[in-house]
View 1 (tube, one colour):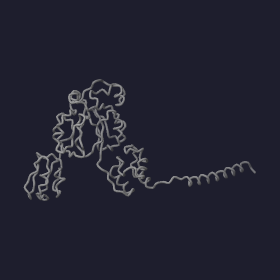
View 2 (spheres, helix red, strand yellow; view 1 turned 90 degrees about the vertical axis):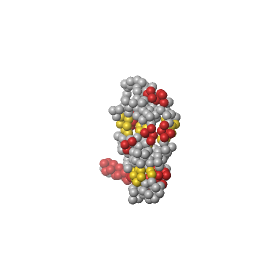
View 3 (cartoon, rainbow, N blue to C red; view 1 turned 120 degrees about the vertical axis):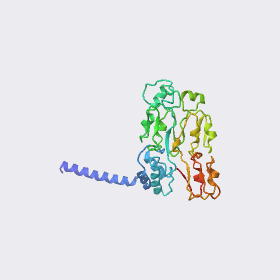
View 4 (cartoon, rainbow, N blue to C red; view 1 turned 180 degrees about the horizontal axis):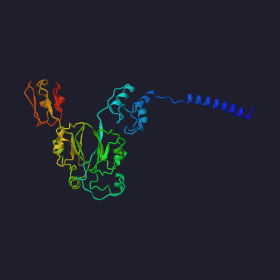
Length: 326
């Protein structure tokens, strides 16, 4: 027999044998694909940011399919993705309130002092190691070298001309990358709907804080004493807000002597009573913490806009939905 023909026949026979073996092995040792997991992975945005706490979207899809993570675990996808995954899993979606990162420092070039001049690598971690905690006099202050900016996969945080990092809440998905990268641990997640934030995390005593930063929290307790909802307390020389109680009334913003508590008073809403809906039940007046609502029983009530702090308690309590916050 011709050697070439013999070789072709031999190789063909070997190919058939090996092919049959591979086909058998693929069936014998096939990994069963979870259809739910595949559908969940397809529903996820594919950012692979790790903000959910799992190794990428694949890891999260597996965890959700196995019941080890909630359907709303993806911070990037938000409510729409949670809804889609809830349908796949056959459960009710509950996306919860959206949260965003916030740099808890207002120690700008104008507000804070420096103890030294740094001329090394423009990296916060490097500066913190070689400059005794960084060039700023405030050991808790943002150094503004952009380490957080460099790790953000969504272009949501930038160091501006004032020398500190700022988060764009519209772009932020709360993935947590900036929080992990910040050597000062001054970036935290806060509810996106809350307009009131303590922009300071300096735990030193008041006198030392004032020397280093004109807008730092001095733990005076004025905010705590004036809050009608017991939503802010001084802990370890720093004011902290309990957002489960905070109504964004902004009294703390008004009262803070150093302006360490941020909140735009121009955005403060006021209660507005719809006359045609008000039945004069007096529930709103009884629950107003600042006596800004008046009126006789069974008569249309009136809001004193100068007194109203925009807390929204009256609107929540009104049984007839006769109060709007505008």
